[in-house]
Length: 153
Image 1 (cartoon, rainbow, N blue to C red):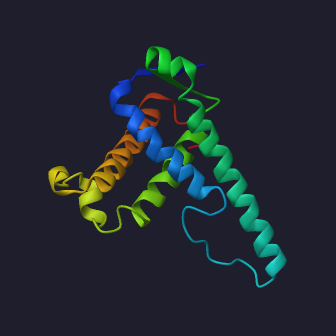
Image 2: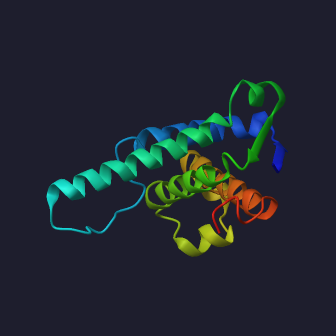
């Protein structure tokens, strides 16, 4: 089994974890993005939505589990076959939430290119943007370093 370990700076990542945990709380009962109804049956739609929220929350829980006692002691997180796919999905959900809420004012192009004037942002927006980049980096690490069959491609 392939495993990738990454050493992170606790001083840099800890404030971002506060943002991630806040987003996770927001997503506890809501989807990261809107979903078009697939059926006109309200009960079916609600059951489907509840299932999607449950899966999203399970993925976010796997991501948050990376930042356990070992992380706070050694600054290390690890990706492997067991957690790669849920972590990629969790990062995507959290980035969608960041994009649509605290970062909506920035627009898509600056977010994707990273061409944002950090000094010109208010502190909460700056933290949200740094969190957005951090989550993107986690996704990229998994995609680059783990085999494609691990993440379901």
